[in-house]
Image 1 (cartoon, rainbow, N blue to C red):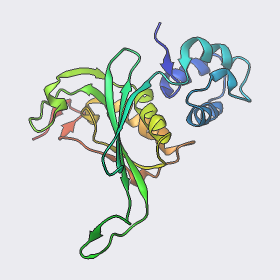
Image 2: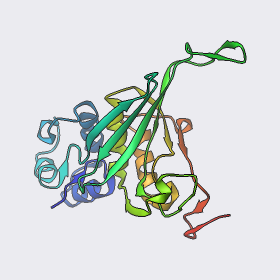
Image 3: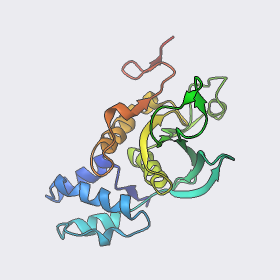
Image 4: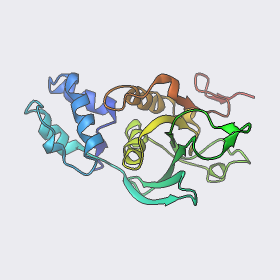
Length: 214
């Protein structure tokens, strides 16, 4: 049986609701996983006793694993290859911004050091854009909200992520529900990203009518 990610919030809430467990304990679980991605769910403190059998039998700390990490020559970009539990692979990329490097309009670059994470929302893509390497793969798999958020957990081991852009593999609006759930998790504890720092990039897909908009 495939385990679910603890960041698959719909599944976790359903099991907790059936067991009479308050949803207020969910951020405690997420905080533990964020801080201990290689840990164990039995190590999460202060949960009701009924929560542990549910977590142990149906969920994992991380359903994905880091297959490889490759730095650019200037060390400002790190590409992570993430292996899903079904064997598929997705890429997520950390892009670091250092204002001390280079000039802008003949002056020091503005801003402060920060890292942006480019996340994937699908394995492959249905859109088949000719300018995109992912488009040549065809569509294989929609990522769950947990598999999207776990990319942020992996990346946080390498850098303090301040911004997230949905510009990796897949068309985000073609996986609308999971993408929205993932963003809601990123906005809350323990990630606390600002809504202004999350960008969803689309080729023009209207999820409400399930068609591409020209």
